[in-house]
Length: 221
Image (tube, rainbow, N blue to C red):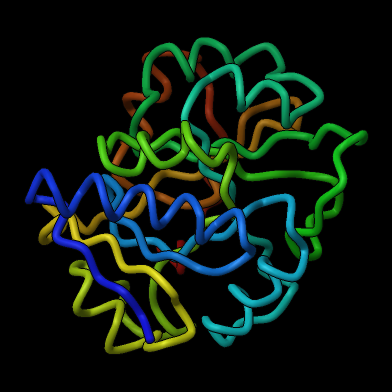
Protein backbone atom coordinates (compact mmCIF):
# COMPACT_ATOMS: atom_id res chain seq x y z
CA UNK A 1 0.00 0.00 0.00
CA UNK A 2 1.41 3.40 -0.98
CA UNK A 3 1.87 6.04 1.72
CA UNK A 4 1.19 9.73 1.09
CA UNK A 5 2.36 12.67 3.21
CA UNK A 6 1.18 16.28 3.14
CA UNK A 7 4.47 18.16 3.24
CA UNK A 8 2.70 21.48 3.88
CA UNK A 9 2.10 20.12 7.41
CA UNK A 10 5.27 20.19 9.52
CA UNK A 11 4.64 16.87 11.30
CA UNK A 12 3.67 15.02 8.12
CA UNK A 13 6.64 16.52 6.29
CA UNK A 14 9.08 15.27 8.92
CA UNK A 15 7.48 11.82 8.97
CA UNK A 16 7.33 11.70 5.19
CA UNK A 17 10.98 12.62 4.73
CA UNK A 18 12.05 9.96 7.24
CA UNK A 19 9.90 7.33 5.51
CA UNK A 20 11.01 8.42 2.03
CA UNK A 21 14.71 8.26 2.92
CA UNK A 22 14.29 4.73 4.35
CA UNK A 23 12.26 3.73 1.30
CA UNK A 24 14.96 4.93 -1.09
CA UNK A 25 17.63 3.07 0.88
CA UNK A 26 15.54 -0.11 0.57
CA UNK A 27 15.56 0.25 -3.22
CA UNK A 28 11.91 1.30 -3.53
CA UNK A 29 10.39 4.26 -5.39
CA UNK A 30 9.20 7.65 -4.12
CA UNK A 31 7.40 10.57 -5.75
CA UNK A 32 8.68 14.00 -4.80
CA UNK A 33 7.96 17.63 -5.67
CA UNK A 34 10.52 19.65 -7.61
CA UNK A 35 10.72 23.23 -8.88
CA UNK A 36 9.47 22.07 -12.29
CA UNK A 37 7.11 19.05 -12.15
CA UNK A 38 6.72 16.09 -9.78
CA UNK A 39 9.42 13.44 -10.06
CA UNK A 40 9.62 9.69 -9.48
CA UNK A 41 12.87 8.81 -7.79
CA UNK A 42 15.11 5.92 -6.75
CA UNK A 43 18.58 5.41 -5.33
CA UNK A 44 20.91 6.18 -8.24
CA UNK A 45 23.32 3.43 -7.14
CA UNK A 46 20.79 0.59 -6.90
CA UNK A 47 20.38 -0.77 -10.46
CA UNK A 48 17.27 -2.81 -9.58
CA UNK A 49 15.60 0.33 -8.21
CA UNK A 50 16.40 2.30 -11.37
CA UNK A 51 15.02 -0.58 -13.45
CA UNK A 52 11.82 -0.44 -11.37
CA UNK A 53 11.59 3.31 -12.06
CA UNK A 54 11.97 2.78 -15.81
CA UNK A 55 9.33 0.05 -15.74
CA UNK A 56 6.92 2.17 -13.66
CA UNK A 57 7.12 4.87 -16.32
CA UNK A 58 6.82 2.40 -19.18
CA UNK A 59 9.87 3.75 -20.98
CA UNK A 60 12.95 2.14 -22.49
CA UNK A 61 16.57 2.09 -21.41
CA UNK A 62 17.32 4.24 -24.45
CA UNK A 63 16.07 7.24 -22.39
CA UNK A 64 18.49 7.29 -19.42
CA UNK A 65 17.26 8.62 -16.09
CA UNK A 66 18.64 12.00 -14.92
CA UNK A 67 20.18 12.37 -11.47
CA UNK A 68 19.21 14.96 -8.85
CA UNK A 69 21.72 16.08 -6.23
CA UNK A 70 21.39 18.01 -3.00
CA UNK A 71 24.79 19.72 -3.16
CA UNK A 72 27.25 20.89 -5.79
CA UNK A 73 29.89 18.68 -4.15
CA UNK A 74 27.71 15.63 -4.80
CA UNK A 75 27.39 16.63 -8.44
CA UNK A 76 31.12 17.04 -8.98
CA UNK A 77 31.72 13.56 -7.53
CA UNK A 78 29.51 12.06 -10.25
CA UNK A 79 31.30 13.56 -13.25
CA UNK A 80 34.79 13.52 -14.73
CA UNK A 81 34.72 17.32 -14.68
CA UNK A 82 32.37 20.22 -15.32
CA UNK A 83 34.42 21.43 -18.27
CA UNK A 84 35.21 25.07 -19.00
CA UNK A 85 31.60 26.25 -18.64
CA UNK A 86 30.01 24.04 -15.99
CA UNK A 87 31.13 25.87 -12.85
CA UNK A 88 29.88 29.23 -14.12
CA UNK A 89 26.52 27.65 -15.02
CA UNK A 90 26.24 25.96 -11.62
CA UNK A 91 27.10 29.23 -9.84
CA UNK A 92 24.47 31.11 -11.86
CA UNK A 93 21.56 28.67 -12.06
CA UNK A 94 21.77 26.04 -9.28
CA UNK A 95 19.71 25.21 -7.43
CA UNK A 96 17.25 25.63 -10.28
CA UNK A 97 15.80 24.28 -13.52
CA UNK A 98 19.02 23.64 -15.46
CA UNK A 99 20.07 20.07 -16.27
CA UNK A 100 23.70 19.60 -17.32
CA UNK A 101 24.91 16.60 -19.30
CA UNK A 102 28.50 15.71 -18.46
CA UNK A 103 30.86 12.77 -18.83
CA UNK A 104 30.16 10.41 -15.93
CA UNK A 105 32.86 9.45 -13.44
CA UNK A 106 33.99 6.09 -14.81
CA UNK A 107 34.70 4.69 -11.35
CA UNK A 108 31.01 4.78 -10.34
CA UNK A 109 29.03 1.56 -10.19
CA UNK A 110 25.55 2.37 -11.42
CA UNK A 111 23.14 1.71 -14.28
CA UNK A 112 20.91 4.58 -15.36
CA UNK A 113 20.11 3.14 -18.79
CA UNK A 114 21.99 3.50 -22.07
CA UNK A 115 23.90 6.65 -21.12
CA UNK A 116 26.89 6.25 -23.48
CA UNK A 117 29.14 7.31 -20.62
CA UNK A 118 27.29 10.51 -19.74
CA UNK A 119 25.03 11.63 -16.89
CA UNK A 120 22.35 14.34 -16.74
CA UNK A 121 22.57 16.13 -13.38
CA UNK A 122 20.55 18.86 -11.68
CA UNK A 123 20.18 20.47 -8.26
CA UNK A 124 16.48 21.37 -7.87
CA UNK A 125 15.20 24.45 -6.09
CA UNK A 126 12.68 22.79 -3.77
CA UNK A 127 13.16 22.61 0.00
CA UNK A 128 11.47 19.21 0.49
CA UNK A 129 13.46 17.49 -2.24
CA UNK A 130 16.76 19.11 -1.25
CA UNK A 131 16.23 17.90 2.31
CA UNK A 132 15.54 14.37 1.05
CA UNK A 133 18.58 14.40 -1.26
CA UNK A 134 20.85 15.42 1.60
CA UNK A 135 19.68 12.29 3.44
CA UNK A 136 19.80 9.84 0.52
CA UNK A 137 22.59 11.16 -1.67
CA UNK A 138 22.12 11.35 -5.46
CA UNK A 139 18.80 10.02 -6.75
CA UNK A 140 17.79 8.91 -10.22
CA UNK A 141 14.68 11.03 -10.88
CA UNK A 142 12.43 11.31 -13.91
CA UNK A 143 9.11 13.08 -14.33
CA UNK A 144 6.33 11.33 -12.39
CA UNK A 145 4.17 10.19 -15.27
CA UNK A 146 3.73 7.25 -17.59
CA UNK A 147 5.83 7.71 -20.70
CA UNK A 148 3.92 9.79 -23.25
CA UNK A 149 1.39 11.11 -20.71
CA UNK A 150 1.32 14.68 -19.36
CA UNK A 151 3.82 15.45 -16.59
CA UNK A 152 2.27 15.39 -13.11
CA UNK A 153 1.89 18.81 -11.50
CA UNK A 154 0.36 17.45 -8.27
CA UNK A 155 1.01 14.38 -6.14
CA UNK A 156 -2.54 13.21 -6.95
CA UNK A 157 -1.76 13.40 -10.69
CA UNK A 158 1.33 11.27 -10.12
CA UNK A 159 -0.57 8.73 -8.01
CA UNK A 160 -3.27 8.33 -10.69
CA UNK A 161 -0.60 7.44 -13.24
CA UNK A 162 1.87 5.45 -11.15
CA UNK A 163 -0.32 3.92 -8.42
CA UNK A 164 1.26 1.39 -6.10
CA UNK A 165 4.45 1.03 -8.12
CA UNK A 166 5.53 3.91 -5.85
CA UNK A 167 5.86 3.31 -2.10
CA UNK A 168 5.85 6.92 -0.83
CA UNK A 169 4.27 10.08 -2.23
CA UNK A 170 5.55 13.39 -0.84
CA UNK A 171 2.83 15.95 -1.52
CA UNK A 172 4.28 19.45 -1.68
CA UNK A 173 1.16 21.02 -3.21
CA UNK A 174 0.62 21.99 -6.86
CA UNK A 175 3.67 22.89 -8.94
CA UNK A 176 4.05 26.63 -9.31
CA UNK A 177 5.33 26.27 -12.87
CA UNK A 178 5.20 23.15 -15.04
CA UNK A 179 7.86 24.27 -17.52
CA UNK A 180 10.57 21.56 -17.62
CA UNK A 181 14.22 22.15 -16.93
CA UNK A 182 16.48 23.40 -19.69
CA UNK A 183 18.92 20.66 -20.77
CA UNK A 184 22.43 21.67 -21.83
CA UNK A 185 25.04 19.21 -23.13
CA UNK A 186 28.55 20.02 -21.90
CA UNK A 187 30.22 16.97 -23.46
CA UNK A 188 30.91 18.78 -26.76
CA UNK A 189 33.38 21.59 -27.46
CA UNK A 190 30.53 24.10 -27.59
CA UNK A 191 27.65 23.76 -25.08
CA UNK A 192 24.63 22.42 -26.95
CA UNK A 193 20.99 22.99 -26.03
CA UNK A 194 19.08 19.70 -26.02
CA UNK A 195 15.79 20.97 -24.62
CA UNK A 196 14.34 24.44 -24.25
CA UNK A 197 12.94 24.96 -20.77
CA UNK A 198 12.65 27.27 -17.80
CA UNK A 199 16.02 28.96 -18.33
CA UNK A 200 16.18 30.82 -21.63
CA UNK A 201 18.95 30.60 -24.19
CA UNK A 202 19.52 34.32 -23.67
CA UNK A 203 20.23 33.78 -19.97
CA UNK A 204 22.63 30.93 -20.77
CA UNK A 205 24.46 33.06 -23.31
CA UNK A 206 24.66 35.87 -20.77
CA UNK A 207 26.82 33.59 -18.63
CA UNK A 208 28.86 31.49 -21.09
CA UNK A 209 28.61 33.23 -24.46
CA UNK A 210 27.81 30.97 -27.41
CA UNK A 211 25.31 28.10 -27.10
CA UNK A 212 24.47 25.80 -30.02
CA UNK A 213 20.67 25.66 -30.37
CA UNK A 214 19.72 22.67 -32.49
CA UNK A 215 17.13 21.72 -29.82
CA UNK A 216 13.95 19.94 -30.75
CA UNK A 217 10.58 20.26 -29.03
CA UNK A 218 10.20 19.92 -25.28
CA UNK A 219 10.14 16.30 -24.18
CA UNK A 220 9.73 14.07 -21.14
CA UNK A 221 11.90 15.11 -18.16
